[in-house]
Length: 556
Image (spheres, rainbow, N blue to C red):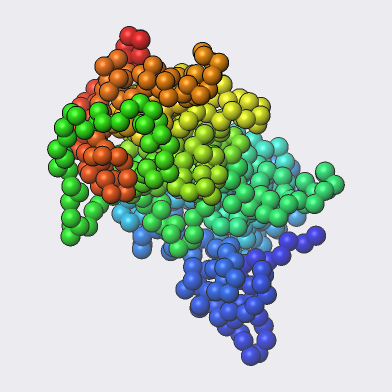
């Protein structure tokens, strides 16, 4: 079956020489309109594949792109009949020397190495020269301490070069590894199609993986899968959105937003905040007044009921209120994207941080979508991936904990819930960056502790933190779940009790109870105190941070 030409298809009728036909909806649009629309169909939103020069114009600052490694000789290891002629024809058709173009450029004045694969050149298959240019690009970026942005598309390995093409998978992966070990950022942008050996090498090894909407992404092509298993594939299988749901893509980004997204990620991963509008009012950092008796009004059971209220602000509300430039990242890179765990990169003051939270939701529909704040193994693995990413780029970590506990379901057990929690405890104990954990609602058992191995743990005045729910405690110890209210008093689960026990370091005032009304005051308190925390702990060495965290938990 011949692949359709998904680049611009010229309508050759005499009436419309300047029109193109969309291969998705079949409608004609003026070429200039589609070009002005960043090569997206003006009728159905279909994403045309983009030529190298057009992609450079869209992403790199004007006249900033400087090509590299354009003169690598082309081998013919198999002496395959007709291969030389195919290469010559591809060069004539595209004006390119090979399927990938690499070079230095700036993106809104931020320096990087940019690579672009072009499907017009033998479906951007990876032969020796493609692998060599990519490896050299990463080596140059490592030497010059630059991030790499790679626009990826490919039909896979180049069959005409046989086993030598296969070796490019390891060569490019090794170059990415060295670049990563130097603490440098790599962002692949997966475009249509990204398949085969490219998917199984440099395409999926990014610190942050982006994709264009609707891009086909997979190791085996859909036709091969259908022929092998003898089944029709579900709608949307192997599309970018499918990959995001299954945890392999951080974000699916509209083409109009790609340059800004790349700039944001490059800046935040350098440890800086994005430049602010000078006319923008500075955030309110004045600490509100707070009397000690304000957090002593409710009983333990009343606080249990309060933190279960859907009226309390969620993790995302705090994140957006306290931080700037929040960019959410998705997926555990293994199985799925747990929507209960949210996380990404943000800034506070002049520095960037990684923020991670348990999101419960504000109504029944969202609570169901967020699994009522009960993380699954993939949620904990997603959180850990973001924490290890933060460690690589020397970003402090702020977590927002509000969970009745880890999800106690069959699928969670099948996917290793206990192992996922244990791995978080193990890895968080040794993180080389400051970690601050904020208990903003329920802190239920090991499911909460898996995000609360901090250098300090703070609690909102009406939050709870416990070995399990009062109902569960009463059922296990007294065989009577109706004694939950009594259990809440016995368990010492409130902020004032835990401050006396040394389990937490600070109580966060709620100015009554946490709500949309009190959120600005709470956020102002947290902005100031988080800033103070970062100033104190950022002066400590990585070993001192690890030791302080070890001693903190060792005393228990």
